[in-house]
Image (cartoon, rainbow, N blue to C red; front, side, top):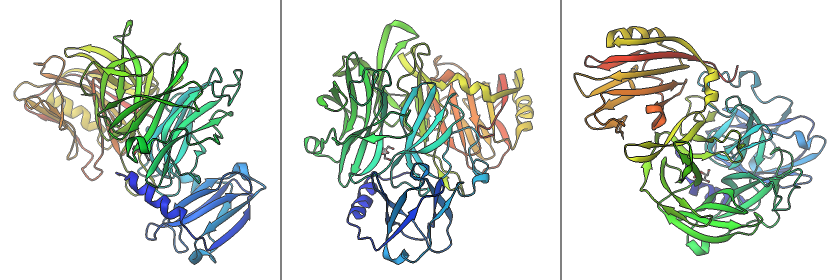
Length: 543
Ligand code: FRU
């Protein structure tokens, strides 16, 4: 599941130097163009060149043999127009493209054997980081790093899905695609309410996306705007708006997170060894202000009240890894007031929080990519459940907590609640749900005759608590009451993953399920007790 960013640059390099052998011009009469791909052939360079608009360079495992699966491009907005497809010579005679009004195997999509049931995944291809998370006019937008043409990382586009409840998502055509400058790496979206950029109007503000243009050996920042709620974007002709390779002597300058602070815009950008801060009056012209070391990729920065007290706020800054710093921010400089802390661990990476959540809601909502694959599937990666982030006073000072947003509750149906159980009684109850792949188990486990306990699914430990070593599935964990013999956990078990929230979200982790480990639940330890146990069925989001 791990990807190499360098690969993107290399492949683009070869892509730019490509000599195309063959061209096919087709008139678009249907909504989708289908392409056959096979993982047993090398990637070839192909360009989609619409009559008008930008050419899209791609690297694709196009085959004239038996495809492993078909991928597709939504060409609804090109209907009636011609598109020229340039590809290598050896495929010039092959009749490779199909047009259709449905996507390949449409009726099977979302019903495949290893499709996650309540986590967002894409119909086809690869996804990684959430991008441009924003609420606007009643819709949550989830853009994401996407390779629509293969289940592995390549050809970075911004995929796009929308939801009105953060739970049920509708996939839309890709929002940003590779162009002559490079591929589309991670970034943010903002609503330019005051029309500082001049791209929209105050009465109809533009959605402005800031993203990284990944070119060979160089990463630059670009912007694009949408006047139709993110359905289509126009790239700014002045791109790149930041090109800082020389300043940092580094090709790693990426993942702009943009937000408004007072009357200016702030961009937090990962550059070389940490996060830099830039400011702008108009989203086009950016000025460097400061830098904080010790972070890698995908910055986020936001202010939160401690225990909900608006008089006592702190700024939270993180990178892609699940650790964060607390500090103060004056619109140009971040001053840390704490070291690094970890709030989450496991498969999650590159989490981002939503911009533009209405004040009447006021939540800081986050979505994280999860580096989980789904055996045998033609899609890869998924998003973890959306969570609400809060700052809470703990025995160690203010700490970040993350727990599923309240909207997740609509999917959960209680199957029973029990109290004061022995280990045997609890085991008898949870075994009734063996084999379930959509289950939530909320329980507290009380230790007494030893300092470790586990909750397993077959041979795999979903909870593996060592109170003596202070570890939970291998990560350091110290409960709020340091001598507490009780662990409170809330587990969400999906077909290919499990998410575990401990102590009301003060620590959380996610793991990929080992699908060969068995499907029997068991609570293991020496004379454990279970003060509370509640089990919920979870609806599929695709029904
Ligand atoms: C993080 C990341 C980002 C980059 C993107 C490329 O997972 O490496 O830094 O923009 O993925 O897909």
